Image (cartoon, rainbow, N blue to C red; front, side, top):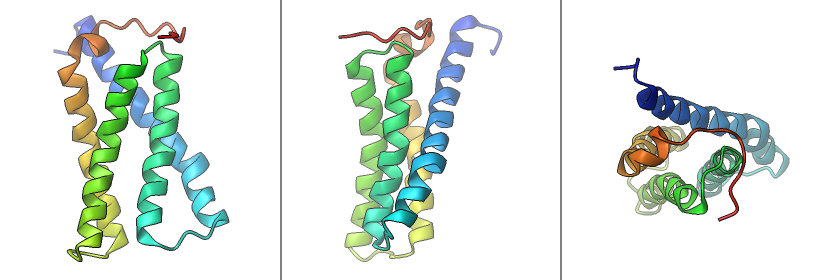
Length: 134
């Protein structure tokens, strides 16, 4: 039920991470791909993952999360990217649009799984904006 404060915090955190990822794609992803003239599908997939993950982790740190949850969320982004790179490299498909769709479609539930495995971190965290040092 959405009226519970822990549930709202959980959903808010997920939404904030998605917004940070979107901002990263728009602010860094597309310009980097254009400026560096990245044509290789593997590099485009890696560029997408990096430009979404870095701002998401920066936002998590700003919101006070320790490095371990940030590392777990990074893994939630990297594992799907490695999987689609596997599809590309094994010749299953070289359709960049399909690969990016799969990459994104698997990142979202992967992030949710990481959050559910550390539910207290995402429902009890008060999000005051003071980054932790540990």
